[in-house]
Length: 148
Image (tube, rainbow, N blue to C red; front, side, top):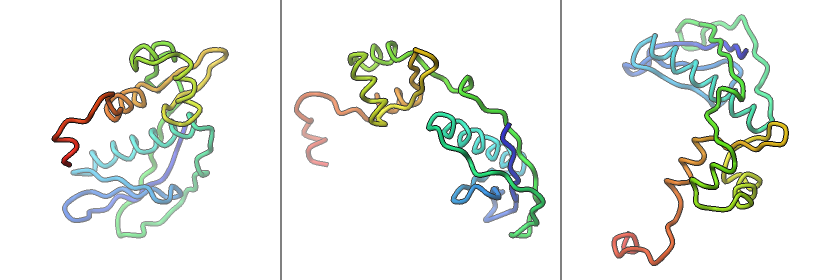
């Protein structure tokens, strides 16, 4: 369970959400309910990233007073590696059109994001989709691409 306090306040017609203890992070929503949902998504995403990359999130602190004239709410989310959409490394190789060994190298180099569970390797679906979108296609670039 990941629990953090956020300050919610109106800012330029939107509802801003600033977490205490998660420096350089913030989110916003069109109203308080939307901002609370976005804050929960932010904490869940940071928690999943920390689990995938083996680093700890800062320890949460409580009892904060508003710094921007807003209200302080506590946001709690559950996150585990089981929540992350993944595929096996073999399936990722098939989708990307590369060898299983190449997927291992891409995981090691940080090109793909994943983790090991026992003897099995898993790759996040999001990192495979991102790789498919950004991958340079073989062959000569089109005239439009070359001119850009």
